[in-house]
Length: 216
Ligand SMILES: [Zn+2]
Ligand SMILES: [Zn+2]
Image (cartoon, rainbow, N blue to C red; front, side, top):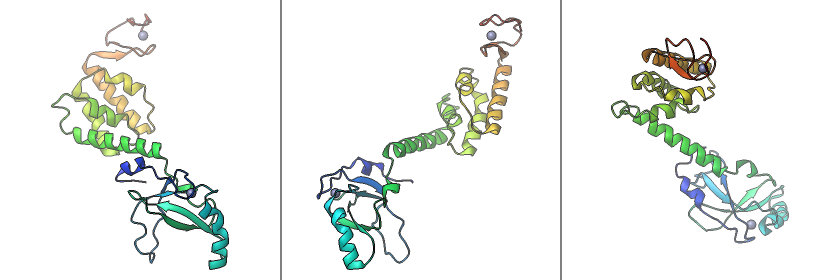
């Protein structure tokens, strides 16, 4: 899910009936005819099965509506006003609990990608290779700017980027090949090669590796 304002996840909501910490859940999708829904992507819900409205609700719903169900206490972000939601089962909402940590990480990755993509325009003149590397090493980055980043690598002429690329596991073979090709060009341009035995970068004409002493 894509929440615009993650700061609401810092909010602490305590259930007024049982004192349990209410859990941030994704709001259920609004069906046509349901009106505007809750107007929030996130609902804080008391998922405590010992909570009084939940425990006593089964009977009330049965008597009043003639079907299986009960109530969960709910609060909207930025509000302590108490609402109840009818739920059909114990597991309602347990599948939509927001993984706050994961969501923050996803958001951070996305923000970094966005900043790096923007910085691509000016990073060459600033001689700042970082945005290029961020995109190359980000498996979730948008393909087009990521491809552009690989192609830009040759203009930086910075052999120190090779290690990070070699140590990265690329998911897409075609992209891995694109990085291999650029590294080969980069080495050639600098009259260097990688030792086939220890992978250290050495002079293109070397007959013996300076690092592992292997005969080439
Ligand atoms: Zn409660
Ligand atoms: Zn070597």
